[in-house]
Image (cartoon, rainbow, N blue to C red):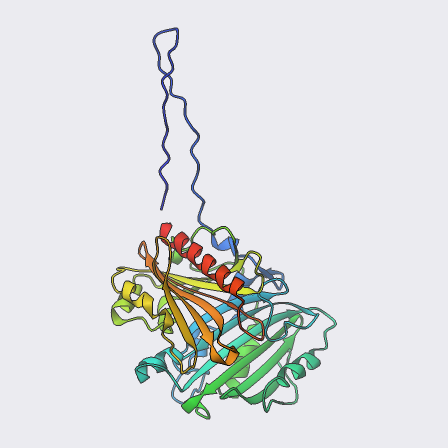
Length: 399
């Protein structure tokens, strides 16, 4: 929202002609909205925002038919993207290596559509994730791959082959109630891991075919980064000014319907979300808390009415879980809620802070968590996430 600056006049008597001159106070400009170019975290000699173009599309990830002749996940949705480096939310696969530079993670699943079909929480679903990492020269790549596979219960690593000039290792694991199919791909300074996991009654199903998993992961390694961000005009007005305490990291433009599907919008909200073809997803760094990963997405709405009751679903889980969630209203001009999720398996400690909010014809979803292995958050991190989410929500609805 633009701010109106006033010009205050103060009459001054002059000796000639009785003229009155107005002295003015200089106007203070409102903070400018950020632009896609501001989201410029480095990787592979370009930005994470442009590197996202190396990832497969929804059409490529989704199974083409009931047998998954192409693709790996039926009805794949979400498409969450995250940037990790030696200074931003460091953690996860490959990140502990001294040769690690940065990586881009992208994740899809059909948990939302399966939860909707089940009328609550999905017990059977599949997920697909690509971790695309930049690795310094001199790294022992086979050792990095073997060490990662060894972390998983029943992990088995296959012999390497060469595909499209890249070295490819297949692997499997039976881990954390899911059946894992994995492909590791190395070429030049890129090392990727593609992981497809079947949970519940999708275990052993037609999802996650290894040949398709390999093709998608190899494609992310051998595809060059984009040179410009397509469809920027479709998200005009959705990129807020950057609040103090946050640093722009990554921006991604995604089709609205699949991006929001895992949030289970009501039919009325889904119709309101159809106002624009695309939504925008962001990642920010949190000042003084480099271990935190804060990601958000913003959509345009034709009506806020169906969004307001939906914001309370931030504590609704779409998969079967023992986690709990503490719900509270968000402060500031945005209407919505913040939910602090805790996990009994981690001693009941918080694992993420999340929010749904609406205002000024927009819908927002934010998640803030620690990527490190143990996953739990300190009270200071929870407070920092809550403050950052509140500031970002305010920026979104005040624009």
